[in-house]
Length: 252
Ligand code: 13P
Image: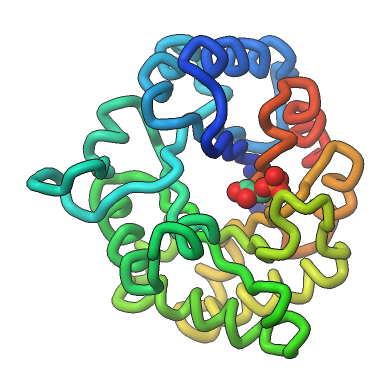
């Protein structure tokens, strides 16, 4: 009943020209019918051009990699959900661990950003995940569910229904060290159980929970075969059309 979602996070990579070329290559390779929804998140400067390159096609959607929670104002260097929507986005990655670790993102800013996205009709892809130290200390579930609770604070059921959650263990990002499918499944199931308890079983059953962290063409199928893994948030392997499309195809 949940349609898988495969999203490519291009991070700080690619010029406008390279981004347009990659988007075109993905569109070209993508089978006409895919079971999964597909999103790409280029750098801000390339979003508008990629939107133009995708043209009328609805097979690949656009996401921002982050946003601020105000629409406009004296906030040098920031971009708002309203402007991302204007540029062609339908979703925004919120609270990526790189934002949390390097740019001072907190549970509170993640919550406000997710709320701002929702109020503009954008899908927030809220990232949660533990560090290696936290995993080794046995606190994975507490950390992940704590981040989840903070993001859900104040949201009504109809808002939570529109969220996507991405579980990205920090130790698996860019390291080539993927979570074992069973370990990913355990955390995904805990996320769904928490949403079921906090919001409703019905909302939890429809919630898409993506896995991210060194997802590649050769491990994607096993991860996405897990009952509670509803797709992937892909970094490095999304920078190449062939490997990204292979991951989309692995979703079924
Ligand atoms: P990698 O796929 O490069 O590990 O990155 C994952 C990620 O951070 C996606 O948001």
